View 1 (cartoon, rainbow, N blue to C red):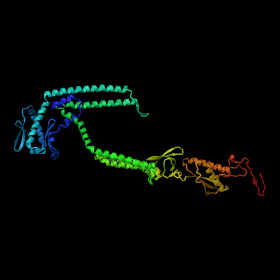
View 2 (view 1 turned 60 degrees about the vertical axis):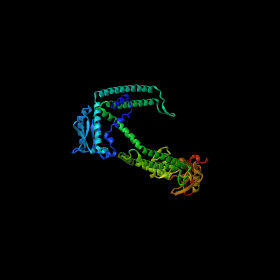
View 3 (view 1 turned 30 degrees about the horizontal axis):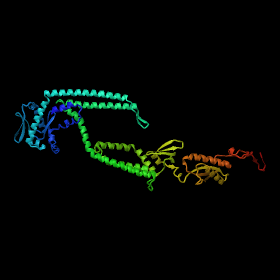
View 4 (view 1 turned 90 degrees about the vertical axis):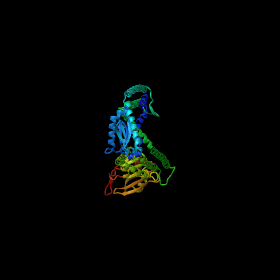
Length: 556
């Protein structure tokens, strides 16, 4: 059996580890093969009997004051003494029955006693178990002697030399092959990696990446060859054979565990796949419905079209969260304490570090459903006035009339008062208003006409509804007139105000009505009037300063 295994190992040094796995898995203790899982659970306190690196059988019963462990140790000591006699054929193991017990003898010396307690877990009779123990001891002793014979050691040495020569040959072959591959990668003109006109990776960089991958592949193949070589050489000699099996088990056992775990996990994986597929197509259906609402193809009374996109995101989040909760118990390691601990830790970090973000998200949703403003609206938020250029999950961006873009957190927007100039401008119109102070000497009807005429002559002021004037105060030296005019273009409100003020000045100057300032004083008889010269009549002449005496005489 050993000779055939060694010959196969020498013929193919790079055999897959599949051939090494049976070496590990096939060396199961004979006792464990005979026991059923129920038997091993019923008798967990057995002690194995070892001969070299092999497990011969397991003892379960007590013999007088000696337990299973003490009995097994005594049998192992006797096997060390009597093993050479068994291996060379000087003696053999005999089974005799005495006083209801079966004893194993080597020559005239008792090797061990088989009890009913030892046979009970195997389901065999005491006599049959004793005969099996005797045959197993004889076979193991003979195999151990054959493995340490001069011929076996010589064959092992020859096989080791052959394996070493094969290893050197494979390493030299790998060196030649990969050196040529490196040269080919450097000399070959490799086209760059592009997406249309955009170059993702240049040709030189791509060559370096491929060369690096080739180097990694060479290291991996070399490590695999060495991993096969070392346990193979160790298996040629009886003293190092246990280490060979142990080295193979370091990789084979984890791989077998992963493979068996993967097979056991397939039903759960199928369940997760079904949930993912159902969730994906459900989200597509939900997106289709809300897209129809957003475009107006599916009108819903009381549900505004701009609500469709944020509502879709909310519903999608709920659906994905529900699917994740359903899938969680089926994830690998979901029931382990480590997985639960990491989940709790991540949850605590998110809850502590995202309180501000969560408040901004909630505030953003409230602003959407309150319809405080839309993108493109002219608004005033606190001290900021401008056009809304973006409305994100966390912030709103406003571009002022000075072309400055200001980012405002949604929570700050919600806690501030929002003035929207555009909402009414789309329908009834936004009222622009300004105040002019005119002295009492000017007739109020004339002032009304001049102000309304200035508003009608201003661009972006609507003719309907018509402008109107309100007298807001009768002060000590002047009357306050408030001009109100409608516009539907709040985006150019600053320019409209500027033009409106220019038109008011023009109309009043043309009519010869002075716009009195609250702090203006004048003594006019003989002085130039406060009207621009280009607005005065062509024959205008400043009157001289005149003084009228009490007797009615006038003069300069």
